Length: 118
Length: 113
Image (tube, rainbow over all chains, first blue to last red):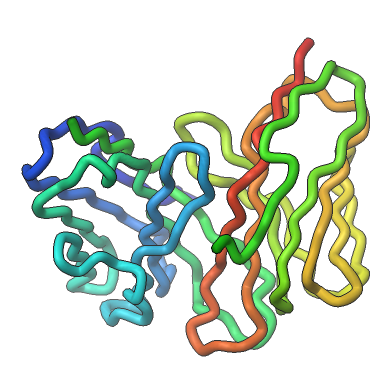
């Protein structure tokens, strides 16, 4: 089974520029997540999609970050304009479902996009 | 405030030694997972524990879920250089509709040959 694909792997931009990341989840996985992982920290959820609808975007800085999953398959995350503190690895993950009361499956993560804002 | 606190933050040991890393919270979790992340890669699931007091073994790794489902530990026996990586615990809170995973800050383990 193919894994979660992300591109690009690396991106360096200047502050105030815009950038976009792309993610293609595992085929058939209904739920897609974008996480931000700052160096030395654990991943922090930015947004969760169920098919093409947003389930939770409470931690997404909506003044500069946007995400979409138009056809319920692949997704893009955009930052505009970027700030220095946005330097991080952006991880995409997918799972078959949001899960019931007890969810025994894990998320499958992509390799991430390392963003450096200078 | 981090929902899941992991300790130690960094650990450097010699090959063959044993170690334990901890994951603690004041919240109750319906399930808790451990992931390992290597440089330049995303986290990879190691195990899921769902029952208070549950113990799971994966070769040289032993995972335990606390009786109250608020904490967990990972014990590695006879560590090898291949065990080097960032170990992350992630919990799913019992209440709430979205039930996303919340990650701890991680333990960076280095096993020296």
